[in-house]
Image (cartoon, rainbow, N blue to C red; front, top):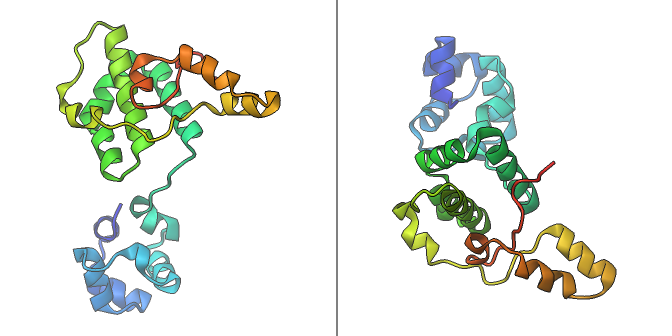
Length: 189
């Protein structure tokens, strides 16, 4: 929710919020019109607004902050979503939400390419045609291969690159095309 949503929900005008919070009307107006970003405001301003609206500071800035999780966590979450939703519903949800393009535009290339590889893989597995929407992104490739953390650990323990070589042999084609080494998406815990 943005500040306008909170104002509407609480049935408070910008002017009234200014009086209750002590935050200048122009600041509130600039935030509500998008001229100022609430996440860039001083903590005391966010605190005053949150207190006056009877919400948490996190509530005010939550939809404005993006958290980029560890890539292994991202992969695990995607695999769990596939298992929970089923292949077809996952494909539909991913394509309708345009998550692939949104991640790519943020320059979160590993995440975007992993998601596209997943959609392409699941489409092949279910005898569905590949979505033509992402032909431009399919031309991309990560500079360096991304191996699963377990493979990296095995290399370190064995002091050998052999686990990397072995994992490449079993990699799913839709993933390896983007330089992402993935061999199993179904058995996640």
